[in-house]
Image (cartoon, rainbow, N blue to C red; front, side, top):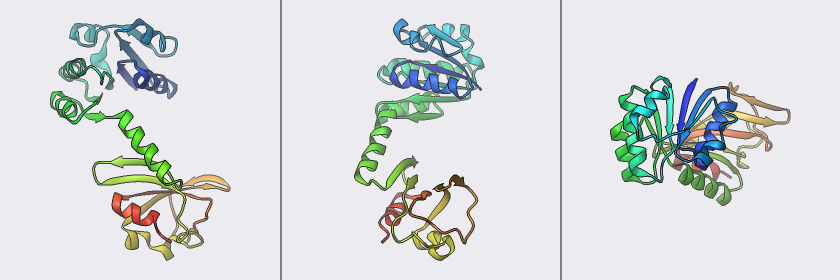
Length: 217
């Protein structure tokens, strides 16, 4: 894919490098030469430029990218203007970094397809994993739903999915199981699959229902 990352702070530069490692064509820009230097040997195009100048964005060909990430969260006016320019240039998917609810609302109004809070989300995930060692990963989906990875509670170990009836009893869905012995991931789960204490469950549902499952004894 042809992608762009605007703003090369810690989040933006890490994102640009990872997107390139995944085989994408990546354009990256920032006003800071030092920030651009961090990625210039890896990405396809690294430019010292002002993202608030639409003419510069067009000259760099950013109107042709499939997705753009605006990582200028600490500069509210800059991120809003860059997002607006990209929208008017026809970029279909714009992901913008926000630092407040008000900032998010403005970004969505001027054209952002999605708004992210990297620091807040990382803090939430860390807090949950520290509070419960059995919770291995956590992905919120909207305000009510989440996908989590967790070690199976004692009540689930040694039983089959058919016996547990997690959909009926807990109102959640087991969407995958990562087995550690042998190491593999099962995406298609048979009703007679027996849950082991070494498995990692990937479960989706409402947050309160997932909490009931985690507390199952």
